[in-house]
Length: 214
Image (cartoon, rainbow, N blue to C red; front, side, top):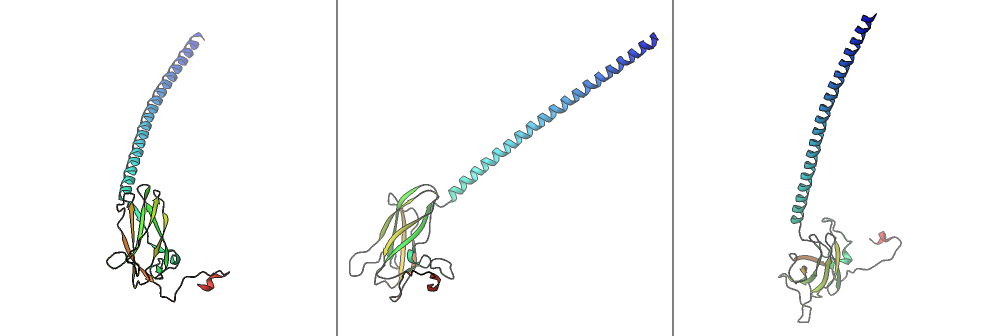
C-alpha cells in the first residue's frame, strides 16, 4: 500500500510538471504571436497614415494648380435688361434689343476668381472701328462707367446705363473692365446688338393671365 501510494504521488508530480511545461510553452507562443501581430498592425497604421498624408498633399497641389489655371475674371454677356428674358430660339441666349434714341439699362454678370476686386466697368456704343459713336448734332461722344465691386468667387450682376444714338444704323457695344489703377483687368469685348424699328416698343402688361400676351 505504501509503495503504491508513492508511485501514485510520483505519477501526479510528473503530470503536473508536464502540464506546467505545456502551459509555459503556450504562453510563450501566445506572447510571440501577440507581439508579431502588434508589430504588423503598427506598420499597417503607419503605412495608412503615410498614404493619407500623400493623398492630402497631392490634393492640395492639384487644387493650387487648378486655382492658377482659373481665369482671374469671368465676365458674362452684356444684355439690355428689358430683353433679358427674351430668349433666342436657336442660340438659347437672351436677345439684345435696343431702340435708337433711347436709354437702355444693361445687366452684366461677372465674377472674380482669385480675390476680392474693386474696379470699374465701362460700356459704349461704338462704330465698326471700335470708337465711341458721337451723339448726334454734338461734338461729344458718350461712355458709361460704373463701379464693379466683386467678392471672390461670387457672381454679381452689375447694372449700367447706355444711351443709344438716334442715328445708329448698326450697333456694336463695347465692355471694358478696369482695376482701381485704371489698367485693364480683362480683355475688352465688343458685341453686336439688334436695333428695334421705330414701330416696336417695350411695354408692360398687368394681367391675370400674362401668357395671353406672350
